[in-house]
Amino acid sequence: MIENRIPVDRTAHQTSS
Image 1 (tube, rainbow, N blue to C red):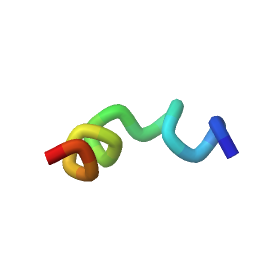
Image 2 (cartoon, one colour):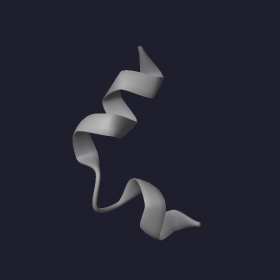
Image 3 (tube, rainbow, N blue to C red):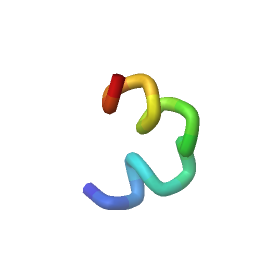
Image 4 (cartoon, rainbow, N blue to C red):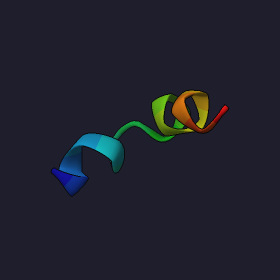
């Protein structure tokens, strides 16, 4: 589950927005 947001640093930022 954590592996999903670890390799994608830019995608995690978009979700935070």
